[in-house]
Length: 452
Image (cartoon, rainbow, N blue to C red; front, side, top):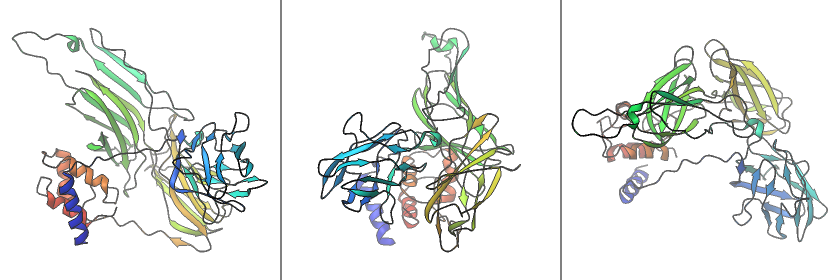
């Protein structure tokens, strides 16, 4: 551990805190193949690689394009012509034909991509034989998602039309990306004639303040956090009715990306809502109507087929909960959150095939529907194994996700040699050295509790 800490600190000093941290989100509408889970298996062709850089395989709502690589048989073209290419119906059901110079035509009817991006089923050809996408050791995954389960967290807005003299409000209603359902948040921006006044000599000036206001629903008494350009900007606590309201003031004019997420009473997190916002001089932007996705968990890591597994989490009180279980035949179940926002569903695993599965949930209330929650995995097998509670690191977990990794490192690096904000002072006091500043001592603490 100490050797690791020494290496960690050496890297920190050597790089001078210049490490760029990238927050990458999956492309749900134009997906690529996972760098690890990229191999299918053919009884005649052997291993088939869908994830080579030269193959450039992409998954969209209408097609599967690019090339699959076979060591023995060469390239297999997924879109050999307009009339015979591999197509996608938007729900993940593939059809059509691929073609290899050395292995002929391959029929993709029967191959499916589920709501977690997992390929399943078999393609087939007279030379290739059956090609399996989900056998014992072959797994193919993409970050594309079917339209009916697509996470609608990045909303599209029309352009500001500008401010004219007199007090007015410009309101922008989000338009949903393709395949998303439910309503989106509302973004409004107020301006006054003061914004257009030119400068003048003498006398007092107008104090220009830019701010953003966030409001919506999370879970009763849950912690709601707002990130500004990847950094924790402000946190608040939702009320008993799950509603929250918080704001950021004294912002400079410019473009920002805000992420909003919540944590329930057990530390489980929602998916993040993401908002790009442009702040102009003297304006107040209001993002309202936010409805954060539920949290979700299961009580077993493995369940004997035919036994029940409990799916549970938290959302807004009295909301309708829709649960999806990813399988060869997807299951869709419904339940309702109680007055505390807690929901629980006992799932009969008899209809599920043996192997790995995942589940997600989303909420509906008052005409609004959330995006899907984060996914939770479980195994259907021959025995039942209860899930052990997650043990969080004692220190160093700056974003409260029960991990100490590069995200926490980047948060601490941001405050290195800078005055701490009031919000971050509280975090530094409980998670780091509690000396009111970020030094190498704090990074050594993070190195000791590092989980990766």
